[in-house]
Length: 25
Image (cartoon, rainbow, N blue to C red; front, side):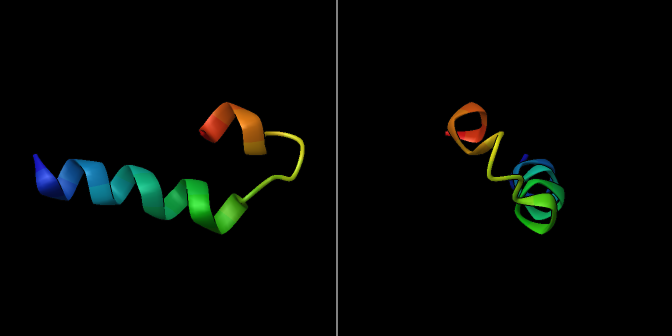
């Protein structure tokens, strides 16, 4: 499960869309 969580954060961090910033949080 840890791998899945990290994998999900990796793509989100790379994109780090300022417009989606609140959505990620």
